[in-house]
Length: 346
Image (cartoon, rainbow, N blue to C red; front, side):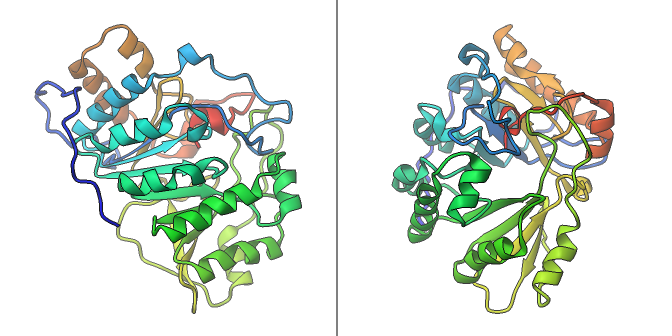
C-alpha cells in the first residue's frame, strides 16, 4: 500500500518549551508513544459485556470534545513523543464526520502511525477512503462467527456487515487485527472457528480477557480462566513469539497459519511493565491507565483557555504520576459500579 506523504502542517503548532520533546516518561521509566483517542461513546451494538441491556446514558454532545479540540490535543501529544494514534469509540463511525477527521489527523506532522478500532458494522463503506489515506491498520471487534451467538452477545444482528468489513479490508491489503473477547460461555469450538481466520488470512486474531467495564453495578470477581493455558490446550503446536516493540499482547505462531494468534490479558494485567499507551475519553479525560478514574481533565484546560505550553506541562506532570500497574490504579480508584468501556474508549 502506498502511504500518503502529502501531509500539511497542523495549525496547532506548540510554542518552544524548555523540555525535550519526546520526553513523556513515567516514574517507572516507561516511555509513552501511543495515544488512544475515543471520539464518541455512541455505538450501534449493545454488547452485554460493555453495556446493560437497557443501555447507559449518553454523554451530552456539548460535553464531548470537538474534532478541533481533538486535533489540537493530538498535535500537542505528538510534540511530546507520541508516534501512534488509534481512533476508537464507542464506535467511531457512529460519529458524523469521523472520516474527514481521520483525513485531517493523517496530515498532522509526527503522526507516524494512524489506526482505528471499529466494530465493523458501518466500516465497509469507508474502506476505499481509509486505504487512500494510508491507514496503518484496522482493528475489528468480533467475538464469534456464529450468527445466533453474535446476536446474543451484541443484541443486534449485524454479523454479515462485520464480515463484509473484514473481507473488504483483506481484499484491499489493509493491515487487519481482530479482537475477540472471551466470555465465560465462549466454547472451544468458537475459539477454533475464530482462529481459522488467522489460519486462512494474514491477520492477527487476538483473544481478550473480559474486563470489568460493563456499565453495571460491580458484582463478583470475573472468571477469565487462563487464556494462555487454554490456547496451549486447544492448539498444542502453538509457540510464543518474541516481540521487540512495546505491546500489551502476547503473540503466537501456529504451523501452516498465514497469520498469528494473540492474547491480551487486560484483566490479569501481566503487561503493565511494558505498557506505552495513554487514553483520552470522549469527554476529554486523560487516562494513564485503563483502571484509573481519569488523571487529568483536558477538556477543562482547553475550554478555560489554557495555552499549548500549559497543557503540555500538565500532561507531563500527569504522566509522571502514572500508577505502577493496573492493580494499583484500581485500588486507588475504587468504585461501586463499572463504567461502560464505550465511555472509556475501547
